[in-house]
Picture 1 (cartoon, rainbow, N blue to C red):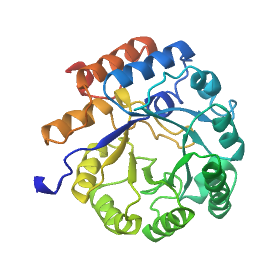
Picture 2: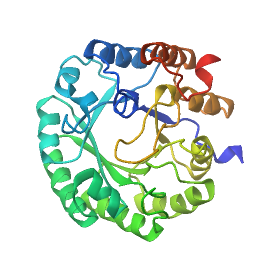
Picture 3: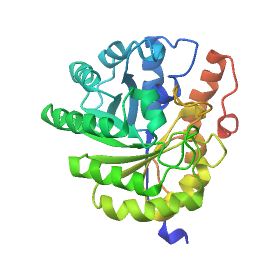
Length: 298
């Protein structure tokens, strides 16, 4: 079974964006930059640094331009930001980012809560964003949010998710994302989805964004590894959650993911001890225990 695993995987640290976005205590720009620098020092080469959304909706990300202006100059590190509309894209471009993340929920209810639009309207918006981002010379990672279930609508038909993936691929996205935004996915569902989506994607990398809301995140990651997925979003300390999804807390933790991958002999290039130190310091700053397990052991 182990022979089916990839030799190495890429972990994409989303802590500075997804991890912090729902925190009530504001994290100053200086500290956000320090977190990013420490993440790089730990060996992570891809970092989601901020999101370009309306500050009224996500106050923690109101400093997006200020953060981007102070990003370290690292030729071997890719910084990306989340955008959900054309205004966000223009802001990201003016801020100097070369890589963006975007997507549309597979849930009509969440699509209305998230962007005040239907899925069909969201997909049309994506076509414009992808085209304009490529014209700017930016790479685009885009995909399906709540691909494995929605707290408002329950089960999401796999056929709907696959159809959305096909549309994204037809747009020419550089990477395709499947997000378990509500943490409702299970290993059997994960295997069934990936067995369909991976052949469709072909040479386009598929990135999994997994939440551990119900304790299934690492199990889903394991199954995805068996299926051949090599790119995963993780967050230091297991921080994270969508502000528009009730109860959707906690990405899979970077340090917990690194530990499992190390045990499986899969290379990440990430120093688990340094990530653990980041999480412990964040616990102190935020004044609460983080959901990750390994940061107190690493």
